[in-house]
Structures are given as structure tokens and as C-alpha cells.
Image 1: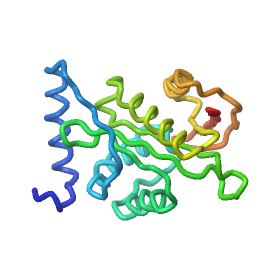
Image 2 (image 1 turned 90 degrees about the vertical axis):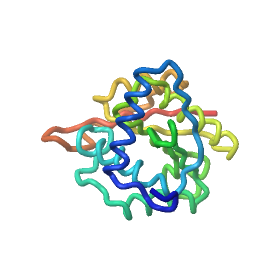
Image 3 (image 1 turned 180 degrees about the horizontal axis):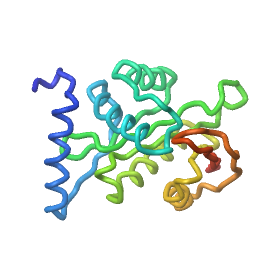
Length: 192
């Protein structure tokens, strides 16, 4: 595959399987974080669509297509917000980003972040690396506070955020409906 070609879902899944097998059989796993590139879109799309179909981490019902996801990412970058990826042996295994919390001037120092790791690579420190990088970038951009909106069923994510100093500031009861049940949203905040 030429470097200018976008990876197909099949090539991505095959490469992911090989990397996963390599990581299981290897004690060295070097994860690199870097800014998003357009070529990462298919990897990110696969991670997002898996989360949409199999979890309550996103309250979307319908999977996204390539162009929709690319537009979402480019809109954040065009507003001077970061989109970063975690890469293992050339394969994107996670990503994170933040953007405006609300579209009002007074909220200009508050951002809401998102962070997703490929389901085959949970528990490997990838999320920690991505969140720390987002926090560092937010500080450099003189952001005052980061907000995370987390489904209450995802206690692992709540505990994960607490390790970085995020505090639960509220719960919005029955704010989402997915998989035939009402879902509560936990609001978490980190103030710099």
C-alpha cells in the first residue's frame, strides 16, 4: 500500500491482529503520541464505530462514514483544538481531542475532551498517555478547565479520570437513551 493511500478497514484489521499478537509475545511496547494526520481517519473511524455499536461511551446510534469522521476532526483542528493519536508500530490504537465546551465567548477557557482506545489495547497505558498529552496541550493553550462527560455505567472511565485529578461535579439523570434503557451522564472537571 502506498503511503498516500488511506488504509482499508480490512488492511487495518489485519495489521491490528499482527500488532496485537506481537504485543502479547513481547515485553516492549512503545506507544508514541503525535498529532492527527488525514491518513489516520480510517483507524479513528473503526475505533469510534466500534464504540458506537458496542458501548455507551458515545450516545450515537448510527455509525459514521469516513467523510463524516474526517469533517469532525478537521473542524476541531480548524478551530485550533488538538487531535492526537497513539500509535504502535505505525498503527493508530487510540486517539484523543478536545474542543469548546459550549459555543459562547465566556466559555473560551473551558474545553470538553474525548478519548478512545482500540478495544484490543485497553489496559496498556495508552489512555494514560493520551490524557496526559491532552492535559499538557490544554495548559499550553491557557485552558482553565477540562470537562469530561462520561456515561455512569463506565465506572472504569470515572476512576481513570479521578487518577488525573478530575472531580465529579454532577450527574445528569436519564440524559441519554440507548440499548433500550435510560443512561445517566457524569460530569467530571479538572481545573488548572
